[in-house]
Image (tube, rainbow, N blue to C red):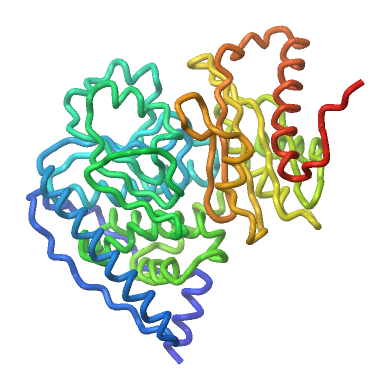
Length: 427
């Protein structure tokens, strides 16, 4: 009976933990951490057993490779670069890497160029004291980048970070890329672990923890909070575990021994702002629905409201007879006087690959970098406006500029949704 009760608790993600104690210091003395061999229960079929054995072998191999990489960079300083608008998966994994690296006396700073505008992301950082910093393109120029010996890309491959070029120009070498998205760029790091078939990067990092790269301790407050962040990241990228696979469930089961359910619930209960609700209302008003696709342009948004776009897509995809929603808008960054077309895709259609759909719809820039990509059930794109940025003081001009971009994006999307349609009607 006790076993069944535990299973029910895990399924609802409502396991409780002991009250957190004060933060404990992590010994900075570099040691070679022995890697534990993980053992997973056998599957009902021989094919399942083979798959588990293969996955175990890969996890062990990658964990050992990462350990060797960390040993080779003892006593150094590193930058962990996240996408401009980091999500819970990216934030939690960056923190996990930072804690792992501390054991080798490697000091890491977690940085991103954009902003945290999703209410859950803000709550995650504030409630856990997650050590992420915003570095804009302006203030990175005042940083002494020569003090850093390497940089890490986590939950991205550099295509969604404005900071990448500045770091590369400073001559900082790429040490590691750890991601679960499809390959986006031709990168040559010392260590690479890119697994597109894994639903969340948090699953990959939890496997590192299970392999012995860091022994979580529920008496250490920082470990409990990091485990909570990883659980949130895993839950977020698997649509509340509904798109999770066996590896994700195994990772969640391991984290359930350490995370704080009350803390996670507080993060998930963060309220939407009025501005987010206004964007959702705009998406509802402007949407067009064709062949079970809902497409909506929401006009101009402030930089700080950027995360309202994926939340609007999350809402539109719940409409009856809609399996895919795409929401986009022009986001204005007042600090750098830049404008970017930003969009999000959400789908419940199993046969639709968001990564392939977005890449085919919007293609790539002159350097061969795709404007967007995706993972199971979700995707996004960012298209710089370059010379056309700004100049919106004249309302008539601003409206005309939006209409041009709105029509162009709809045309590219509808060519895939319904090739017979032509959104640009001739006179």
